[in-house]
Length: 168
Image (cartoon, rainbow, N blue to C red):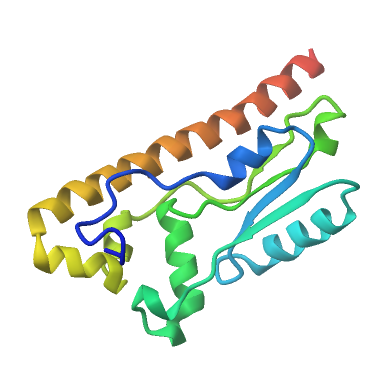
């Protein structure tokens, strides 16, 4: 629920990172310091070293999310564990070596998105006002997360296949 989506947002979230990756010459990383600060530092260092455009997309909690801001770092970790915010790096330089430039740094999702989303007022409000619609939107959000994770896993699989072909 937000100012311009009082009944909840029925469309999936945009994948800014994938849009940037489609150019092929942009370093792209998605990070969450609360989930994995080592990955975040590595991504920022790689982005800075890249001789070209770089985009680092960092998750940042906001008071408008309606969470206890003292739990910001653990909340980021929870969102990564749901697959809502996967951590990854896309480095075009790696593609020049014959490997796929995409690296998925997150583990597979280990908890349902709805369990974490309900900690945020923007999601919890709809569960109180319109529980049926809330359930539909949570199922849709989980499906979007699952689809994105499957796609990112396919990117990772492309690299494994390429390495196996190179070894034979």
